[in-house]
Length: 99
Image 1 (tube, rainbow, N blue to C red):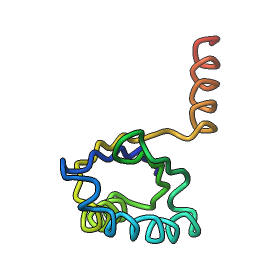
Image 2: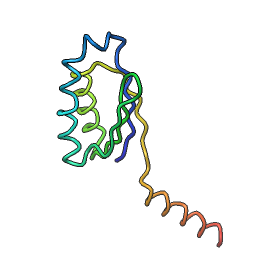
Image 3: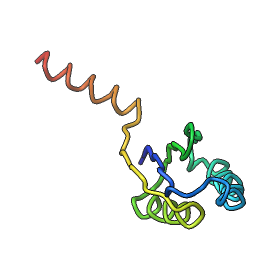
Image 4: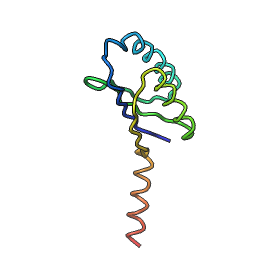
């Protein structure tokens, strides 16, 4: 299951969170190395955007709770569809319409 996650950290002074924020990237690196975090980019100003490939909603829930423990944030979560799955769906719709 693919999910796009957009984080919006709490409105705190960035300098107050600098030490904590330094722990975020090594923590996230483990998820990148395992292939769970497919992409992650810092947002201009504050926050990050990430794409996760997880086995279940529970796994994503655990990751986001860990993230919020490091950097308290609100998350917008969007389910995504794999490009190959989208192509297959479109092909089946075209085939069905041709009948």
